[in-house]
Every structure is written in C-alpha cells, then in structure tokens.
Image (cartoon, rainbow over the protein chains, first blue to last red):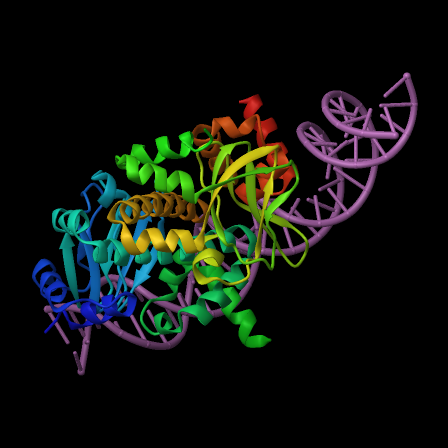
Length: 193
Length: 193
DNA sequence: CCTCTTTCTTAAGCTACCTTATAGGCTACC
DNA sequence: GGTAGCCTATAAGGTAGCTTAAGAAAGAGG
C-alpha cells in the first residue's frame, strides 16, 4: 500500500489510532509524476499538501531576468508545498518540478481543513511539522546572511549528502544562491586543499 | 490588564471562549525588560514563548569574527522566541535583546505543552502562527538568494516602515546582511535618484 | 547506436559589497 | 556644559562572486 510511508512518518511524530490511519489513507490521493513535469506552476493556486513517496522534486522561483532560485528540494519522506499560496489561496509565484519519475501522496486543502476542525491529533502533527520547517528556515536565513558561499556549500554537503547523487550542481548552485560557475570554482578549490 | 493585547491577538486568529481567555490570562506572565537587557543569551535554553506588549527587541547571532547578524525584530503584537532552542530544549546560539524599555508576556514551555495536550483551539492558533512565520521565512530566503542589497532594503522599508524610527541603521544592515557602510551608500544613492 | 541537450569546467574581466580609516553630529550623563 | 560614547557618512583599496564565452564530457531519448 502506497500510504505506508506516510503513516510511518506520521507515527514518528505522534501515534495514530486505527481509525485515524484509515482516515489518512482515504484522504490522501496517490499521483505519479514524470520527470520534468510540474505539480505546481507560477500562476496556479497551490491546492494540495504534497508528500513524496518516491522520487525527487525541486521548488523554485524564476526572476525577471529568467534566473532560477531554488527554495527547496524534496526526496522520499519530505513534504513539498508552496505554503504561501496554499494557505492564502493566492496564485503561486513558484514552480514545483519532478527531477525524477516520482510518486506522491496529496491532501486537498478542503480535506485538511476538515481534519483541523475535528482532530486534535492532526492539528498536533501538522503544528509539529510546521515548527520543524520553521526551524530549518531560520537556520537557512542565518546561513544566508552570515556564511560565505563555500561555507553554505559545505553545510549543504554535510546536511543533505543524499541530494548530491540526485540533483545537478546547477540546481545546487541555485539553492545556495551562487552561479554554477562559481560553485565549480569552489569545488575545485576544495579538492586542492 | 496587560493580557488584553494578547487576547485580542489570539481572537484575531480564532474566537476564544471566556474559559479559554482566563486560561490564557493565567498562563502568561508579565515581565518588564530594560533597554539593553537580554531575555535570552547564547548558551541559555529558551524556555518561554515571548509576546511583546510594548517596546522593541531584536534576536541576533554573533559569529566567530564577532559580527552580529539579526534574524528578527519585534515590536508590539509580535512574538520573539528562538524556536530551535525552545522546541529542542537545546542551548541557544542567539541573543534576544531589548532595544527599548519593554513589557512582554511569557508562556513557559510546560504550560504550552499542557495547552497542546488538551485544547484543539490552542493547537489551531499556534499552528496558524507558525504557518505565518514560515511563510515570512520563505519569502526572506527567496529575497536573500535572489535580491540585491538595495532591493532587500527597499522591501524592508515598504514592509516594516515602523521599524525605521526605532532601530538603528547598524541593526537594519545586520538584518539585511550588509555592512552599515554599504547601507549608507545605498541610502545616499536612493536620495539622489 | 547516434544525436541533441544538458552539465561541468576553466578563464578573463567586471561589479557588488567589504575593510579600514576618518570625521562630524547627536545623545546622555556627570 | 562639557566630555564620552554612539551613530551616520564618506572615501580608497580589496575580495567574493558574477558575466560571458567556449570547449569537453556525460546523459537522455529516439
């Protein structure tokens, strides 16, 4: 069953009753996404919370000069959602693209709202997930304003070594906020030392 | 009563029953903080969620070269908490300093946990606050990797004009991730144009 | 298996931002 | 009411990171 990774993930936060498990299994919809296809494009309203069962995604912005800036990657057991668009029900300014053939589980906003109206458990789980995401976001902000590009790259390597095999250096550069050429010189310098 | 701004703030998210209001009023503790005093210092575990009733704070990191990097300011009706330290119960790497004589309301972690065990309402309120904070954090990450220093300053002016009167340019520079000298040249250039 | 696209690297010249230093204006406090 | 401490501004020289360009290597897809 495809929902198993999601149920395991939830139980890692808070134990679920059997009833809650079947509610989750019923509410989330499985979806296959091919490489280079999008589950969100600029202008769309983000209507789903997306949990990655298999595969790899990136969420990015394209600026007025056409340059891409990556906010987040996601692989197995990660969430990838434009929460600004999702919660405000406004058109997104972001793209979410599959970097590999992928399988996701999606929760519609209406179904999530029902969960939140009724269930203490689901409020606690999503509150915890959001707290964790915020802690990560705060760390990244601090790194962006206080680290050099090389320090940010080293931290990325340490924190997300799994991504190295799966996303290109072009995309890592756009996550770190540098050009691919400069990332290349950083890598060259590191080999030397 | 000092808790009124907090109750108003909560009700702006979700209506509270009278019973819930008195629970809140009882759980939060008022505290006066003098200018240049700290409610959190590096090495301390952050044990309270802090709501600002009056005054002004900044939360910052001091790096190994002694330079300060500001994560957040807070004035009336803002929260200021090192959530990484708060939720993980680990020593903080941050300082939270009063920039003016201030009054805050603080909620101990144990009391918040009790709220979360029992109350759907409080889970929903804090989930919503955390979501909003995450949306803001995401916007700031995008700005940091895709905006120039001048663009970040312009957005800061537009978004937080109240802060201009209350925090120094040195501190704004440390929030934007530039030196005070460079902020000064940006400001000079703007007047000219 | 072959071709087209993407990826990575290297290098030269350039720009944004930093460092250090100096100086004037403002505030606060003895 | 003077002096110390902080805040802002200005300028010169330095460095991190960008732009453009070009070629080699690796993959994707037919």
